[in-house]
Length: 98
Image 1 (cartoon, rainbow, N blue to C red):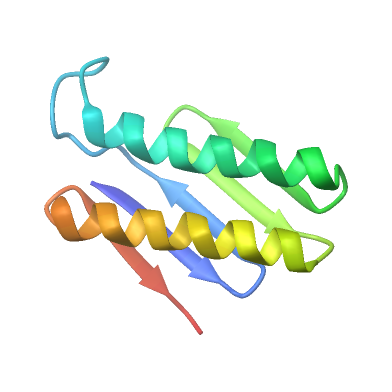
Image 2 (tube, one colour; image 1 turned 90 degrees about the vertical axis):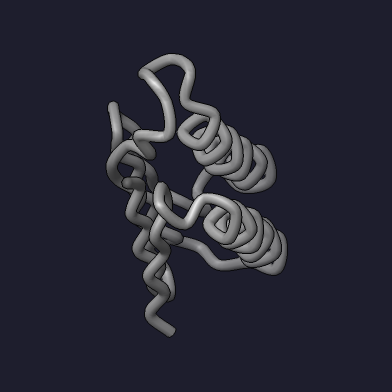
């Protein structure tokens, strides 16, 4: 299961969806695509907006410099991940601390 912890300026994503075999898992691919696209978009606007770590089965994002653009991109990412969670509840769990 992919576990996503969302806090004000910190997002941690860890685990594997286990929807299918490694390399064929559409849920893992979707989460990776959503998150990496968001990271790249944020960095294209402001290379100092976030610090992140990406390794096998783990992505950690720290928002360093908030801006309207960064906030909108993060909000969009979270919405997309929540939509995915609705469709794959056995594979993704989101915990959001407001």
